[in-house]
Image 1: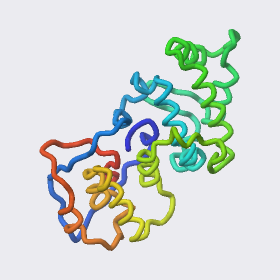
Image 2 (image 1 turned 30 degrees about the vertical axis):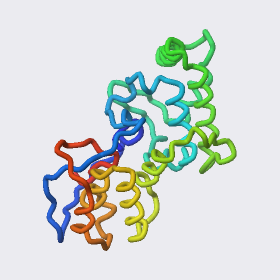
Image 3 (image 1 turned 120 degrees about the horizontal axis):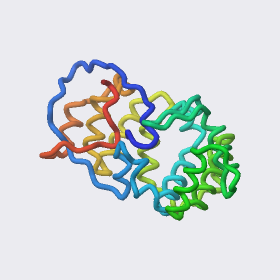
Image 4 (image 1 turned 60 degrees about the vertical axis):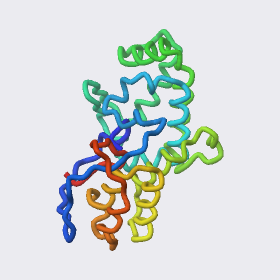
Length: 230
């Protein structure tokens, strides 16, 4: 899921064995959050809408911000994204954004422009509240008592759990993840689980049989669970 939160993952080299791969493509069901596949998501209007911001935030709370931040090493300094360079770690950045909210005494151009854009988009209050909850969540694995469960997207939560699994993947977990992806209609993602994910290399499963259960597509779909072996 190379989107907002997956860009820092390192590519891995891996050679698959026993079963040869092919050039077939498989279906990938459309979702209400398909835009998260876009590499330019941070500049997309979809992410500016309050309802989408809250859905993502509540889903990440349910998954666990602290776990995600540790897994992606997001608390390292500096923070670099495309043409943005901030010589702070995530904790310091969040603190600075909170402190610079709703004040005219902003010494940094970045913080001024950040909040100016939020005001233009009319989502500054929601973003401010989200930042405060992120700050609190950094000290907690999950914020179960404060999660608005009605806003959590269960499908996105499942994808996060598959993509950012921090435990050893057993055969039973691998089959469960494959079946989840297949049932959601994410067949290209399921294929990648079989052949294109280094952490599934040692799983004892019949790849040819499982591959035959997937529905082919005439076009190359963009999957949520991407190849991390190259």
